[in-house]
Image (cartoon, rainbow, N blue to C red; front, side):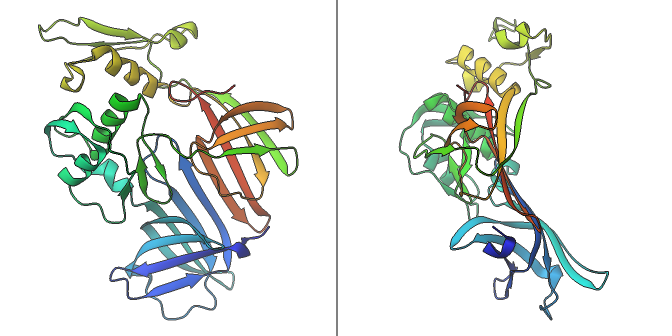
Length: 317
């Protein structure tokens, strides 16, 4: 498998100019469970492209065969002449990044659905939302909360799950349509095992309506590992009706990705975040979810790294 299967499409601000680059030198696409956007870095050979204006390129699309894998806003595009080569390099972020950088309208939202959050806030071009009608009694959006913060509160209240991105720019709050994928030792190039509890908290305390810190929650796994990191926070009106739920999920998020397993294989099967991964090969055996995906292609070939997290929102068995 080679980079010939990939195409980079660039458009200018008006969308009137489209440039297609198929001589891919390298690309790296990263999807991560708790990051509200995908990231693409690429380098292409532009030797046969003439007259394009790099300063006006605004959108980037990555196409694999007939499948569109990524669509986002260019964060930087550079054209370089080096060692007799004309190379175009760039970085782009999925359009859902705006959901995590734009403030949500503050205040109380009663009988709130995902569509309600989307319609109550600034329209986000090229961003779509999971079609789901379940509603929470309320969510309370604080000043400086982002739209992603509001969506996360809704997802936790409805399903005790954390939102994630599917497709190219679709916000999901409930796991649906997970494909179970099985892998064997063929083409496995490396295995990965590790842990990261650098952000984990041992206890979090929240102030009550009387000004005292009457609510608290402990993370038994962090404590078992000898982590002593305690935090105090003011009253969060988001969780007035369920303080224990709110604090538990703050601890979950603090130790996101705490334990992980994974592997790299040669090739690409167009996996999605939260797909089921089953493997019994190359010295590893487990069933988990796709929590992080790294697709890398260069002159050596095409390689996919799949990592499964074991934390409050997912498990490895």
